[in-house]
Amino acid sequence: MKYNFDEVIPRQNTGSLKYDINLQIFGSDDLLPMWVADMDFKTPDFVVNALTKRLEHPILGYFYHTDGFYQSIVNWMWKRHQWKIEKEWITFAPGIVSGLAFLIQTFTNNGDKIIVQPPVYHPFFAVIEKQGRQIVRNPLMLIEGSYQINFSDLEEKLREGAKMMIISNPHNPVGRCWKLAELKEMAELCLKYNCLLISDEIHSDLIMRGFKHLPVANISPEIAHHTITCMAPSKTFNIAGLATSEIIISNPELRQQFQQKMNDAVHILGNVFGDIALETAYTYGEDWLEQLIDYLMDNVKYCQEFIQSNLPKLRTFDHEATYLLWVDFRNLGLSHEELCHILVHKAKLGFNDGLIFGEEGRNFMRINLAYPRSVIKESMNRLQNALK
Ligand SMILES: Cc1ncc(COP(=O)(O)O)c(C=O)c1O
Image: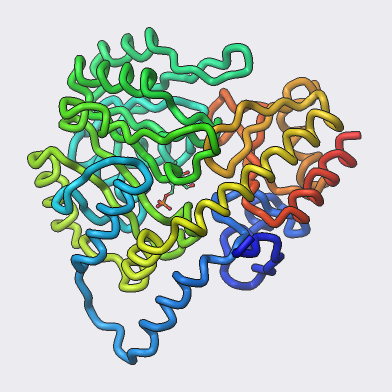
């Protein structure tokens, strides 16, 4: 292995969301935090070196998104996803969630219905509600241990007049990498009912071997015309703190409307370091990413086998994408509150409470597995001892 993912790097007292505010989040700071989705691995050296080099120049003035910035996104989409995009389709957003807020403001009105598929990334709920829109739920179905889309329910919700649908592709937290047939059916239903599809593809580079990410906008020109894609290097290369992401819109009318909204809010630039990190990661990051995926797959395998052998009442699911493991604790027969209490105060583990992803997450937990193997082992031992 060229890169060392085994190194344990203390992150306390760095202003880290994951490490430094656990008293507020869990009521305890004496725990191993495995919640918010950033990684405990080093941001790749080639990215850090590019940032350091920029700092050799003593002036950090205004900047613009260079040709190299756009071209690196175009190249990455082609290399990793065989998606041929044009430079003009790319708009900047200072993070996906703020991008979603502006997309909602641009393309829907107060009180409009927006569909989401719980259990799902919880800021989808907040960003819809905070813009004064209505959340419409199209819950995923758990069928024989596999999460599936409920298409008849989706069609009913679309028929009732939803203006927008936001999907997580691949899906956080359940770890599904949606198949072509699933994406096509969802997108075609949205087309049929004139509902704008927003595909949040922030985890699209973190796909387990044997699966393939499909940008929904790459399925057909008709779907592309009606779809907006949110992407970023932030999860892939552990640079979420740089708040730099790309919203890809091939439909010129939609793009012009969104760009106008961003211009009005003066949200056209982020920070110079975010642009440098994005361009460097997308230009030089493939080799590092391939090794990361192998490491993450081994972490997932370790946890799934550990749980199967030592904690047979817990259940995990086919894990196709992301470094976030979705675990079902329902067979323990505990109340959700009892479960949370045991995990925090006995196991001293800070997982994401499944309930934040929707009622469907009651008695589930989301565990961040982007850690050195020794930490993963420690977490599984703590879990076993606490649940004995
Ligand atoms: C599906 C999904 N979208 C968006 C984000 C956050 O994106 P950003 O930090 O760019 O707002 C996350 C982070 O975990 C996520 O899982």
